[in-house]
Length: 226
Image (cartoon, rainbow, N blue to C red; front, side):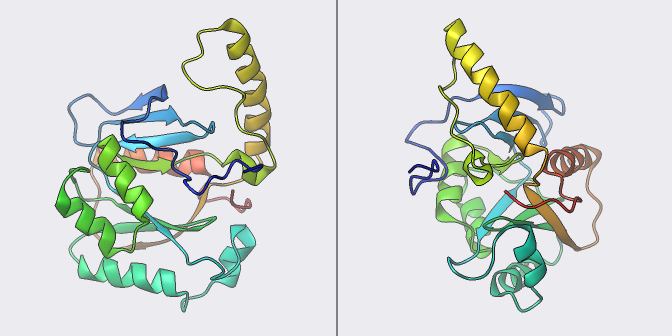
């Protein structure tokens, strides 16, 4: 609890989350329409209407986390093996696989799915996706990928208040916190690119989202994961 962890990392309830919109990517009406928002603990999140991200956690105690844990993982990592097997079952599609602090993230670059459909829930489950992540996609009606680090993984507190911040004092206090968060975030990556599976080419709109994702997460850097 002191680190901001509550057993429910996604901080969701029965209604869609109310989050500050930071920027929009793509044109309204496109299947890859997306928004970058700031979640309750201050991290930037990419929300896509149709482009599926899959969050797959490694079993607790299943190996080292963070950047150095990535190098200790090899091709026998059971979570990565399971992901590759799932990609093989969807052999007509193309996937980008990333290592995260707690497991893996998979991006299907040539699929357009309805986040609320049972078919999508089955698709996510076929990768062994975290049930909490699957539930959140359905509640929000979007796929979500965190772009910036969790504050407690950088030894920072949670934001001092929550959006919307109508009081000037609250806004000023949050902006002070945000400056420290951005400063600390510069030393970490959110995920690290592992491999691409498949050969189909993504659309122009999808390439824009992948480039934004990889740039903000620092997926091609050698920074530690948070």
